[in-house]
Length: 163
Image (cartoon, rainbow, N blue to C red; front, side, top):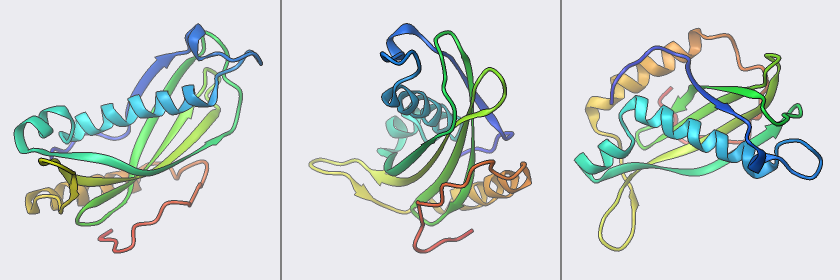
C-alpha cells in the first residue's frame, strides 16, 4: 500500500449510453462511474490489479450505497473524489462525492471494502499486511483534514474500527 495526496479526482464525461428516456443519467450509470472511480482509488492505494498479481490479495466491495442529489445530463463533465472514513484490520469504509459541471453534488457513495485472499475455490477475508496499517492510518488522517462530506449517508459500518 502507498500514500498519496488527497483528494484523488476521477473524471468522466456523460455519454449517450448513460442517458435514460427522461434525458438524464440512469441509476446504473451513477454506479458505473463510482465503480470506475473506486477502481482508480484502489489502484492509487496500490491494492488494485498489480497488488492482486503480486500477492493473490485484492479488495471486494461488500456493501455500497448511492444517494442521488441532482440530475446529470448528456455531455456533463463529472468529477469524483474519495476519502477513507474508517478502517479495520480487514476492511476500509470509503466515501465518495460526484460533482456535476456546476460544482454541485450530483451523488454520494459510501462503501465497505474487504481485503480478500483469492484462492482456489473461494475468496476469503483476511487482514491487511501489518505494514499497511500505518498507511491506512495516514490516509484516514489526511481524509480527516479535508472539508467534511457534504452529504452523510451513514449506512455502512465497520464493526471493529481501528480509526
